[in-house]
Image (cartoon, rainbow, N blue to C red; front, side, top):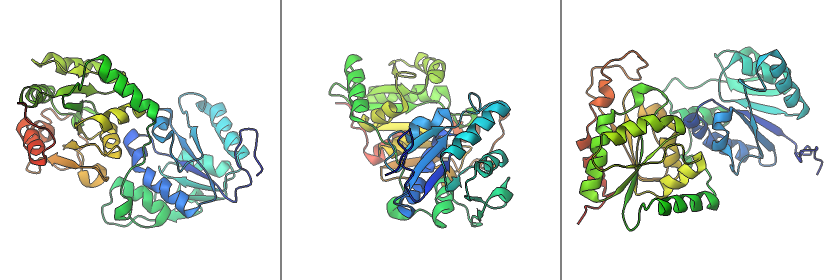
Length: 354
């Protein structure tokens, strides 16, 4: 086997670059397509190029040989940074590229990197730099199916409709230690609530979350953990301040992989449409997904786990909706705590307190 100084296999017949999308949930959506690439090119060297905030999603992915970072705001910023990226890609001798995000600049980087086979979506920006233009069908596709279609020209088969997100034994041990340290889940059920979202319209009202927390604690005797990043901490503290039973706020205390282990360990996860929602799905956690301005048919949960999607279809609004100036956010505020509890009861995910 011929390798370079980084140990990469240059003897592989094909060296494939996957140019990833930019958001946590979307990167998870793309993992069935990565699996399809490995199946289609079993002897290839496969690398993914992804923005810094999403690289952890792909760490430990068994279908990738390498995770590379595309840092537009750091080392790849400006003309010098772009030249650095092109030179780095050219030096790695990739032969095939899949572009999951349509972008003139990204397609140009791939073209200038000397990658001979460049596969992306037709009728999109920069498609004249592609050597293979894949046309998506006119019918509505889940985002995961759209990425998969780029590789297989078809939707994900039923037995493959799952995300890949790998957590280690160390991640699981960290969560067990955290729960023990804070006296959580000591013979009690516990529920993980993800209260954040990458835009406000997708968030459930704070008062709803607070009422739900108190209901879970009083009716089921369960511990409640609010999850999220460090940036979600102020929101989580505001919600906790509205409760009588005081949940444990774990925002900023876990990595994404540790968050996955936490979801796997929980009895129930409740979240709006967000990246962590799809991590919960990857971990096959019992999950209630709260949807408002986005369509479950496009970005809803998929996977082998047990999940329910709650959405008010009676609202007089067009969905998907991107009106960031919306004042009442009726699509989310009209989803009630009672609806969530009714769904939990119906699925038998929590046992009543004695």
